[in-house]
View (cartoon, helix red, strand yellow):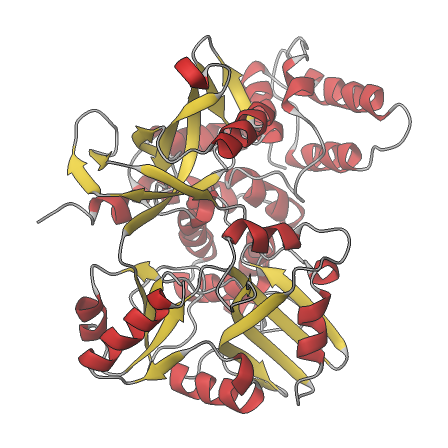
Length: 503
């Protein structure tokens, strides 16, 4: 039986080192000691996540607690899971009082170090989705397996704790038992930035050049008459996008899994604002604003899984099934025609193009070189770490943003710069209210956030800097938009920022 203090100490070891190998060794050592019933919970805790998701506890509730710590460690991993499940089940009249009582009882069983860990966990401050890669390697090490079958099983299950339990309990055979299941979302394949179109084209012998839309990622599953629609973060939005459900239900197939984007168009056929599209995802009632799907991949069709087939085969299946909903683009265009597709995409109001290797399989969750996005301006998806109170006409508003890049080795985001540019009055009002809700701590000048909000930043480039821990700083950064469709695990890494250094 593993105690919570063992998880806390391991988490501390991981946070204290920049060495990926040391992180992997520490986590794998603890995973190897776990009883099967503890694996799911401990894996979530080590990844900085609350087992089972949010428990409905706000930071204000946590900050008001003052519970004397236990004299010594006695709280088990299993007891933490039971306490979190209890918290999640509290609702109705008197729920605030009962939630406080349950939290007090849990913290009374915890040492001072365990209390700090639990408070940060419940408040969302331990969420470090970038730890995902280290966790996959640690699970593989603890199970005595290569990392690739663990990574693939995670892609197909979408749940790291479930994957870890299978690896540690059943080894390679259990991992090989994971298959694409229609109705269960697959973690999406991602594109990495390319310096320019020629560079992207040179990286593959044969390629597809497709429009990069200013829309929201969707994954659609159909099984007979049952259709489900998921976001980039695997959230089920089926009930909010009836027009997409109806369209997919009308396709000539029995089962299918399609990957793509959706966006709202204006009367002229040009894309509306990204915020308009995202607004539909949270709608409780049908809206007049209709969403249009544009599919760019087919992962399954009528009983046949296509994940491991080359992209050319998946696109052929997509063209047979949904030619009218296929994203605009061309197969194997020469450099001149590829440049024309790029210009056509921009002229139609889209962001640029994505160049894809036609020989590549579907490798979810990693920004490799099989898919390369090309845009006319430099942009990065960064994590908001904090915001400073404004001056002058911005007095009373949170204005100057502290921006961080994802640490691929699992640490907290690394600060790479600040900006107060690009903020409209509407955005200033929104982020002031939103940041106070996401506050981890505050001082006279700054509100420090739980690091899980992603913002898209446009910039002129980056430069070497000793001011920030990542060793680089943004040049002429400005806010383009917030990205509610992404979490911190999908922000750009410090490696992507450093790759923008000139020369």
